Amino acid sequence: MTAPTTALDRKIVDIVARHPREVAIAKFALSLAASVISPTWRLAAWLKPRDPERRTYVIVVLNVVYLVIAVATITTLIVRFDNNARPLRAGAWSPLWIWGWFLWSRCAEVFIAFYRDAVDQLKDKPAGSDLTAAWRVRLALNSYVELIIDYAMLYALLPFSVWQSSPTTITDFLWLSASTITTSGSAGYVLTGRAPQLLSTFEIVGGIILLVVCFALYSGGRADERRAAPLRQPPAA
Image 1 (cartoon, rainbow, N blue to C red):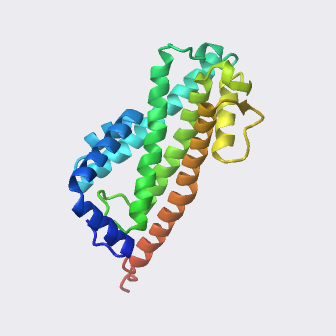
Image 2: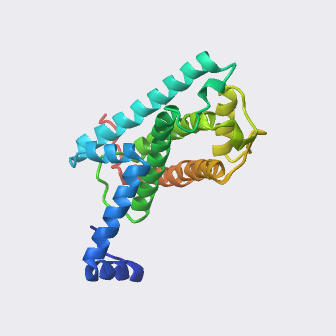
């Protein structure tokens, strides 16, 4: 743990030291809530070892595997259901909501992971892995593409009752998701109801975290790595 550098940091450390039981309960409650909201986040935390090199390997593999799953799934849906997305509409007790829970879990996991990493970067907290800034940019872009696909499939699962103007094909849902995450509009489709609108808002916030905050921080880190690297000496004549 890094030493507190500001008055606020010192105050937080003092509160934690004076109320260890309450802090432990709060941490447990937050961890339990995060595990329910995003089981894949809890799974990733369990799979990542403490060794930085192995931890880096697990992070990269999970990122690529989830992206491949998303691309393969959306491609299959486009081929199978693109002319009619109606069979994907999930009813109140549809088993499709299990798939939807997985999709939401991944969206929440991406948000939690990159938000925490961005905060750690700002605090100059020691990294737990050997990921370079270049690799972080690559993983962020992979997750950005995955989020577009995952949210498109989540939108496709929503019932007709939450739409004022609903897409009809998988590519329409993909276009809606891409338009939403880039804050360029809703592609002419309108969601009604608090929960669906919150889902759309969460996609926008996740996209901002990935594309603006993380990309800016990681790009700055890449520049710092280049400046810190030793200059290459010209070959001897």
